[in-house]
Length: 326
Image (cartoon, rainbow, N blue to C red):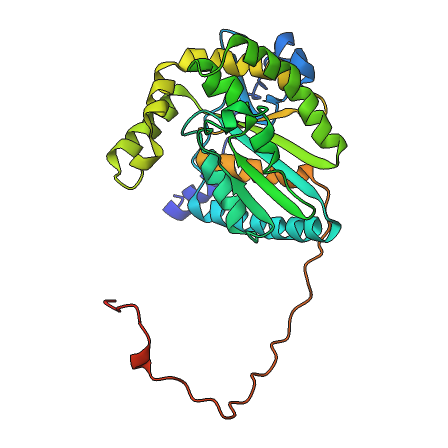
């Protein structure tokens, strides 16, 4: 009689082969609608005008942006630091080649224009890059040529000027709030493209940005400003009134683009619901709009300090010092 070990060995020898697995059916790719692949020259990859979009469309036919994960702070700060380093290179190139650069920042209230301007200006020399944010025109300025007070702020050689709102106030807030007449608005639409072409012919580099923010995100940011005492100064009665006239502002922006989106100085729209991405995208695009080379100065050697010969410092009691509670 076969032993238990022998019987087990015999079973292994006659082991039946496993039945063959059924071949997996490969999924056929879905057909992409012709409208998606042909709209405005899109290549069909879902990317249009610099934005990441899905195949869905809004009521007016625009592609709907895809929801994206929040950009982590570490990744954002690393990329911002890299871009700011490039801004320093651009600044040095502008200074040495005596370029004149004008950048306009327009858009809805709380769209993030100020945040981008701050990140650009923080990295640069304020004597080369300055921010212009004009207030309400004075009674005297109201009698001047409309573009006159803005022309006075244009850059000299080797300067960059960032306009936090600009001459486009006429096409936006002044129009919606009734601060200008229909005749003045029509004249603005006639004169503005020629004014900008004149600037470009004179050698000025002009870049125009419109920051686009959704109704929901703007409301969230407004509420955050209302709740934070440090941010309430950012809200004015005019901002709240503009919020109430959302559709009127949308119509005004559309007509403004119709008249002023010219080949020599096109509008660039920044999707600004995500502040971090908007800042990186805008700064990166600006760097790509201006040709520059790395002209960073060579490392500087610190000279030795002058010897202290015959100098006696006055007593501290003769000076006023800031109190030091910390």
